[in-house]
Each structure stands twice: as C-alpha cells, then as structure tokens.
Length: 471
Image 1 (tube, one colour):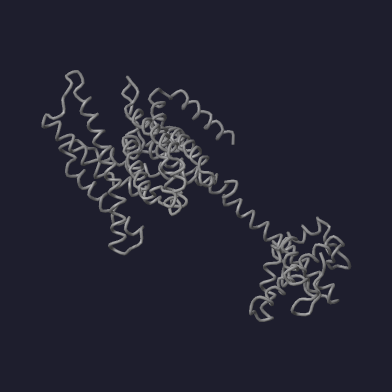
Image 2 (image 1 turned 120 degrees about the vertical axis):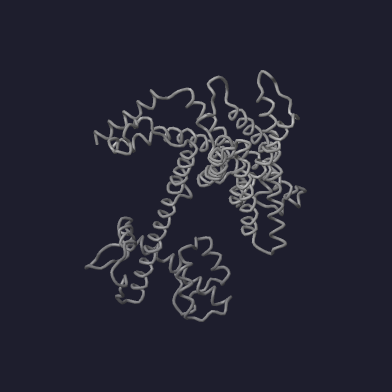
C-alpha cells in the first residue's frame, strides 16, 4: 500500500514539474472544442438522433476535403492573394472559410438525403442514415487517399486530430480561436432560440401548430453540428469528435431532466474530460510501463518520455465519467434503480406476509407462510416487519401485532375492493380475480380505496363472499 502511494506521489510530482505552457494550451483548446460540441450534442441526444451526430462527423469529411482541394486549387491558380510577410495567412483564412461552408452544405445535404432515401426506399430512418453516411464517408476517405500526396493532407491528422502541436510557442493557437468562436456562437444560438429548440425537440407536432418550422430547425441543427465538427476537426479529429458530441450530453442526461441544467452540465463534463484526458495521456503510460522498463522492447527508451494521444484519452475519460454516471446517478443510476427495485420487492413481500397472516387468523387455520425456503427478499421483509413491530413470535410462529393487524386490514380491504370492482365492470372469471387484485393491492392509497368503495356503494363482501374490512 505504501509503495503504491509512493508511486502516485512521484507521478503527481513529475506531472507538476513537467507541465509546460504547451500543456495548458492543449487543455484549453481541447476544452473549447469539447464544450462547443456538447451544446448541439445535447439536442441530438434528446431528439434520439445520436447516430445523426455520428453520421455528420463522417459525412462532413467529403465536404471538408472538397473545400480544402478547392482552396488549394485557387492558391495554385493565383486567385488567393499572398502576403509576402506571411504567405500562409490568406490561404489559411480562405481554407477555413471554405471548410465551414462545405461542412454546412454537407450537413444539410446529409439530412435531406437521409429523408429522401427513407421515403423513396421505404426503409426505417436508421437504415437510410446508414446508407447515406457510410457512402459519403467512403467518398471522403477515397478523396483523401487520391489527393493526399499532391496537397499534403495527413490522413491520421484528419481522422485523429493534432492537439499536441496546436501551439507554435508564440501566440494563441488558431484552433483555440476557432473552437472558442464556435462555442460562443453555439451558446448564443441556444440562448436566442431556446424556446424553439425545446419545443421542437420534445414535441415537433406542437411546434408546427405554434408556427415554429420544426423541419427548418432540424436542418439548422444539422448545419450547426456540422460546423461544430469542423471547428473540432483540427483538435480532436473527425472520428473522435463523435465522443465529444454525444458522451458529455448523454452523461448530463443521466444526471438531470431539466434542459438548461443539462446544457450546463454537458459543457462542464466536456471541459473536465479534456483536462482529465490530457493528464491521463501524459501520466498513465509512464505509470503503466514502469514495471516493464527493463524489457528489451523498451531498451534505451526512457519510460518518462512515453505518452498517449490526448484526443483518444479525452474520449476515454468522457466514457469513464459516463460509466460513473450510469452507475451512480442520483435518479437514473443503475445502483439507485437496483436499490429502488429491491426496496419495492421487500415492501411487497412484507405486505404479502401481513395479508397471509391476516387470512390465517380469519380462517382459523395454520397455512404455510412461505412456499419452500424463504428468499433473501422474504427474509429482509420478515426482519423489517419485526423491526417495525408489525409481527411478533409466539410459540415458534409469526403472529400479527395490533399495528400489524391494522396495516393488514388496509391491504385486505384494497384487495377485495379491487376484486369487486373487476367483477362488476369487466367480464373476468371469478378464479382470475385474485391474481390481478394481488398485484394492485400494493398501490391503492386511502383515497383510491375510498373512491372504489363509493363507486361500489360500500359493499360488505367481495365476489367470493368474504368480508371487506374497514380501514
């Protein structure tokens, strides 16, 4: 344990000592890109269009490549003026302008083509989307391979990003300006059109009746998502941007059911995933490879110099936070839901035991309380009833106490009232009434029991001739 603590302390110290200004700019740029992606991603998750986000990050590729090739052609033809002091300045500005336009057009084209394939091909939306995005992505990859040598397109940079070299050591990285500007625009659009986005997201039909063009908003969202993908293009790459679009939003959705809170949480989670991803990228490889420092494959390679891709670790850290939320979220977490179900099972089992003991006293016979060996839930139920002093032990058998008898009387009343209600209003055989009432009795509160009694003119007996007790 002490050795593990020493290793962690040493790793933390080396991380602090080895943190440079480049690391700060990497985290800032990655956080801005991830936060920009999280805003449209939240609406995609709520619209159940997460695959559309995946498709857009792939289908914008041919638009980006086409825009890049066009700008390269314009430069070669002399259409783009060149500044002698900075020959790449005008070219870079034109390239990014063309890339944004290409991404916007491709994003809208993806939505239109998907809808056209769905209608013409009479297939479901996911199948149409799969046809469109795989085809366009294949075209983009083919174009990259054909043009990579002539225009110096790095396929790895296109697919996986180039965060580690965003800063040249002199000024604010261009990728940070672009991602920051995209984040500002996304925040402004989400704020200005919050009402329209909310209504069209949760109820497109209602939005249309209120005069809001839901289809137009859908196309606009696709265009914004495509533009955001381009903004993150240089930072995290075309493939990993899907993680930044969907995972922070999905994590926030597990933590809250309010839209504005979800938007804030998703951006915070995105920023944390960027910072945590870079820390993991530079600290985990040395920690994991330290035991193998003497291995022949690492001969002559300092373990401290090992690192991993920041964009890849961003996706891993975002995925880790999603898993944590999936397990531990206060309302929708897996552990919480398991706990709720277990407590409900214990309550139902305890109430079944109370009803069984009441019927035992009613019939003056000694039935078996549990069929076979008691389950874990039944044992917990028995323990709970004893703790609440609703049952007690007498001569080696369970018996109802006075509070327990009162609670059991309410259950039996609910059961027999429901049997009477079913018998009066539905054509159900008498031997089928008990099973339904046995399930419903646990969820009839005093108000519903009184309404049932009023509806049935306060009957004294159920369809089987058994007395319906008072509360």
